[in-house]
Image (cartoon, rainbow, N blue to C red; front, side, top):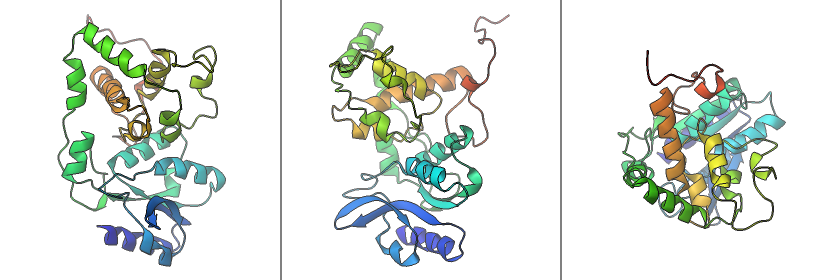
Length: 270
C-alpha cells in the first residue's frame, strides 16, 4: 500500500500539480509529519505507522491549514484516511481551506484499526490503496448509555476530575483553528485553577465539537490523563445524527444544521 501512495505522490510532484505533499515520514527511527517537495524524498514516506498501524498519526489537516494561510495560491497534496477526509470536508465547509488547492491521496484503514477506533466510515470516498471495510459499532458509547443517570454523572465527573488543563486535546485537534479560544475566556473557564472547572471546560469544548468532530481520536491519544474524550465526542456526534440527521464530514457539500438560523424543531408534532 505504501508503494502505491509513494507512486501517486511522485506523479503529482513530477507533473507540477502540487507544491508539496503532506504525509508522515520515518527518519532516524521516528515518525513525524513532513512536507515532501521532491520525488527523491518520498523514500521516507510513512502511513502513520510506527510499532503498529496508525499508532503515529498526526493532525495533517491542521498542518495544511497553516500552509494554506501562508501560500493561498499554491496547491498541496495530502495523505488522508477516512477521518482526515472528513476533516477536510469540514474545513471546506467552514471556509478554512480551498478545495481547489487540495489534492487528496486516500487510503482505507484495515479492519483491525477500524475496530479499534469504532469508526463509522474507516475509508475515504476515493481510496488509491486499501480495501474499504464495514463500519464498526460504538461499544464505548453504548457502555456509558447503559448506565443510569446517576451512574453517567458519576462516571464523567470522575473522568473530568483527572484533567490537568494542558490543552492537549485542543491543540492537536484539526478542527480547532480559532485565533481566540473560548476555553481561555476567563468568564467561562477560570485561569490558573486546578483541577479544571468541572464540568464546564469539557462541556464547552464538546458543544463546540458537536458539528465539527471527525472522530479521529487524536484528542484522546494526546490526553496525559487518559480521559475517554473520544467517547464524549462520539456521543455528541450521535446526538447530532439523531436530532438533525447530520454527521460531520460525511457529505462534502452539506451545511451544518447549527449554522442555519431558524426555529427549534417541534418534537411533539402537530
